[in-house]
Length: 91
Image (cartoon, rainbow, N blue to C red):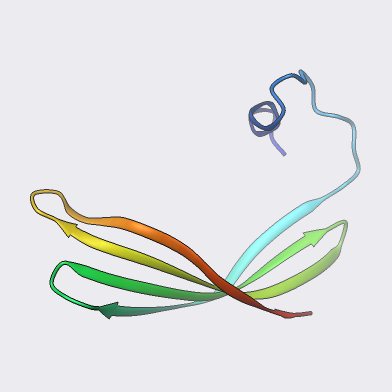
């Protein structure tokens, strides 16, 4: 964790603690699906594998996220809603 990230998470603490712990995350296999419901509304479903590793022990989940977009005149497409649909766990 960076100093800036730690201070944002724990503003009352001034220094990072000494630690040998390691955390890493990665995403692979992104599959986007688009569904346009009208000229002013669209939805994206994004499916991907998310791996989080803590102290060299990894867990992988298949994650599905739905993003709803709306078209706003003179502004273009805007995100209206983001919804975590679910996950399928596998190791």
